[in-house]
Each structure stands twice: as structure tokens, then as C-alpha cells.
Image 1 (cartoon, rainbow, N blue to C red):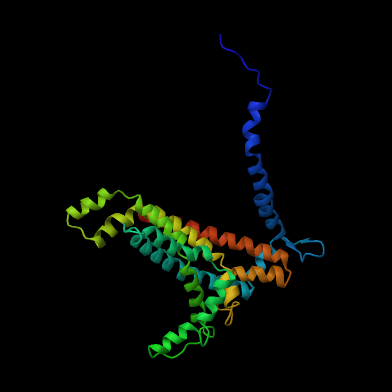
Image 2 (cartoon, rainbow, N blue to C red):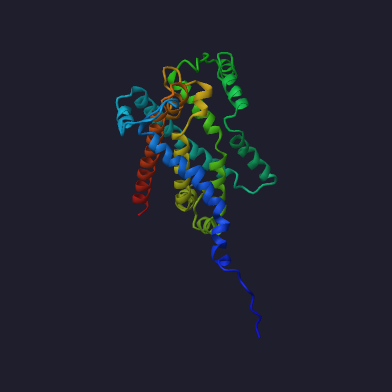
Length: 293
């Protein structure tokens, strides 16, 4: 005869809910509430001192006549269009190289990933600034090969190039995703291609790239989101100059919030950034699907 155990009323019914309650509470308090609060604040005139005044969509309409906003969006899109393809190509190329099985390959993979861990911290930024000063290492190397020194921070293209190089140097996260995907491709595909006379380059375009299309799309979206939200590098290296040529949308939001105390407008700008990311992601997804169908 089976022994019956008494189960307190409701314990089994609510155990799952009790276990996920910390996640639900954290999501509501630190994600959902700030998300909705930001949207509501973006529809007010608020400076953090006096009571917010509801003004509807005025903050959003203001953007289209704000030259700083239009310029910041243009700079952000230009920066994204330059950085993201370069970063994807470089990280994929590095992942292919690091897929070679040689002694100590794990050490090489770690070395290539270290820049992503360091990120744009203060020490890295100071080092980067020194590299491109008038008497920095970049100009010293240029003089060694007979080139004229360059004013890196006085030219718009050069200033943007400095920031792009810094972010390109931090390719480790995209590289790791590519490397894991490449290692999951069955070796038999390459062996069969080799028997058919395919070289490494043809195998790359016929086997590797088609099988990596989903991972490429994933990395593309992640890098676009990161690039559109760029703030640290231009803020710490160029300060948005020269002539606001590196002044991104993230910097505009920061200035409106903490320098000018236009809290309502800053929140509206944040939502506009969210909308830009959503549109770019949707368009990229549409294009990718149309090419793979």
C-alpha cells in the first residue's frame, strides 16, 4: 500500500512563482519601471527641480528643428556605417586564423580577447590619446618612413578614425562568437570539398560563409546596437570635436541631461535612439531574409 504524504495547501501551486519572484521583482523595478518612466518623462518639460509639465509630443517635434540632434544622428550613422563592417570582417578573419589547431592556440585566443576586457577604461584612453598626439607614437612612426606628422585631433576624418580604431581594437566578443560557430561546422564538409578540388578560398565562400549567415546576422545586430549607443570613446578622447564631427547621439543625450538639465528632452532623445536602433534592426533583418530566401 502506497504511503500518502500531506502536501500543504497551495505550496506546490505557488512554488514556481515563488522561485521566479526575484527575477520578476528585478525586471519590474530595474527594467520595466525605468522604461515606462522614461517614456512618460519624455513627454514633459522637466529640469529636475520644478514640477514636470506635460507637453505631449513637443520634445519629439523639437528634435527635427534641433541642429545638434540632426548633426549627432548623422555622425552616429556615419560612425556605425564605418565601424560595423570593418569590425565584422576583422573579427571573422581573426576567428578563422585562430581556428587553426597548433600548440598553445588557447593562449593566442586569450591574447586577442584581452582588448575586449580592457574596453575604453581610463588607462586605455590615456594610452590612445598619447599615441595620436603631435609627438605621439603614430607621428613618430610616420616620420621614420618619411611621412609628415599629422594633426590627428584637428581633422574631422582623422578624429573619427581614432575612435573607429579604438573600437576596432576591441573585436574580441565578435571574434569569440565567430570562432565558436566555425568550430561547430563539421570537418567532413571541408574534406569533401578538398576531394572535389576546392581550395581554401573557395571553401570559405562555398561552405563557411553560408553556414555562418545566422551568426553574421547576430553579430551585425549586436555591433549596430553598440555603435549607435556610442558615448565613452568620443567623450573621453575627442570631446565631440573638432567642430562636433565626433559628437554622437549618446553625447547629446548626456549633455541635455547633465549639462543643460533638460531631463524631459533627454528622455525623448533616448527614445528616439531606441527607435533608430529598432528601425535599423528591422531593415537589416528584412534585407537579410530577402537575400537568404
